Length: 273
Image 1 (cartoon, rainbow, N blue to C red):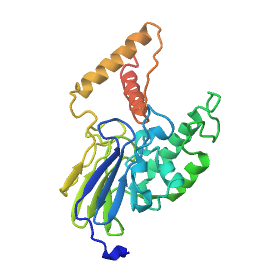
Image 2 (image 1 turned 30 degrees about the vertical axis):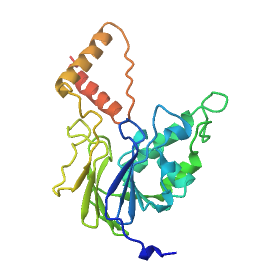
Image 3 (image 1 turned 90 degrees about the vertical axis):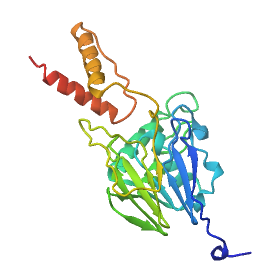
């Protein structure tokens, strides 16, 4: 049997979507090049449960993955990370920003508690519920294994160099710039080019990548301007409040909820009279 050193090094860069390909949810992308393997994000599908919510991890030998880079804390990009580190043969290193780990731990603790138990009720403290992929102990162990990076900090591991840029979107969100054997790949994750009330827009790297992997959820849609959307939002809220009504706002993602509150706070302060 030939040793690993005698085996030819694959010179074709391969990108395999294990989730998030032509769908929204469970973002997870596998990059293989020159004997190195990188996993980008590992989320769950919000409309599915149990193992069915995960990316197609069973198609990959996770023990061969060198790095797992997590772009931000939203469930569809990060909720599968504890499953990978605690329930599979994954032996690689996990990197994310300081803010991503801090908020991910809070969000996933809630995710665990809110899963249904066997009798149909919520799972309860630390249980993970009937459909739970992991529990509070797994989450804590996972967070201990996470290595933290700052924006622009260069990390090298087994011939892989990577660093990150601010992606906007939510607190701590990162775009990862990866270099293997002279080939440069930029993975944006979810990003925002608009400045809002609590975040600056995404950075534009000065170094041109050879391969660009870009989030494109709204790539074919046209949106009204921010000013028009905010005016419609605030005027609708004011109209309901003025007639004595109450508003229930379904803000489904952390980050957007804070932005909506800041918009309303600014609107009412301008109309205090």
